[in-house]
Length: 292
Image: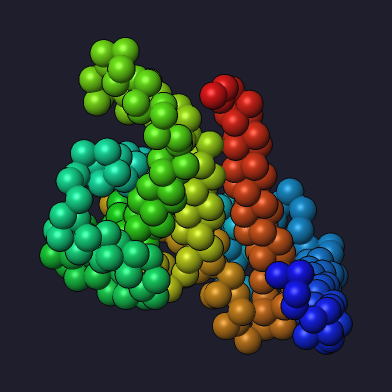
């Protein structure tokens, strides 16, 4: 290597610097555009976002009386039920594929299909939910059908995130547990899952953040855009924040279309930020308990 000429690539350093500057410019421009959009939304929502907006139901006539109570409660119902369905199934599937399933052609086919399903547009899951849950199982366009449809959307993401978290655990942990006489289930339950928990929880919360902002699957199953009540049962009609915001943006009244919709967007962004902040906090807290 010492015999190579020093001037063999005279422009390599300059090209590297230009590439670094280009990447930095892309990053700063993206942040600047995001900041501009946030400033515009905040300016539109200023004076409209208050406690009354959070506690009132929607109004078809007066934008000053419109609120997000029904949509907010509906979104919380959806996220709670989606978590109840997606987390046990997704984490269980990941544990089986990583720790129990033998390396075979069948496992490769399943793994490939899961990876492909993670990139399927959400509207496809909405059509599947309409045919399977709403019409096939006669659930109607209720909270349960919406939660099951969103479960289909996030389930591949939860499985893949859980698998990556399990793969990140050193193999020596498994070997040491087996050497001490632990069974495979004891190794998974007492060693692997606690060690992989920060990564699993981060993936789960980020997947749920995506589900919280989905509107296309809910539109496909026939969820309502205007609701004057909160759901009391699993089969009750409901609306969600993305649907409510979409309904406002289609209104002919400029106050609904601009100011009320912007206030709803701020509420949705606040929920998403809270979920992502929870993911960061949980990852930090549980990662401090891991000692290898």
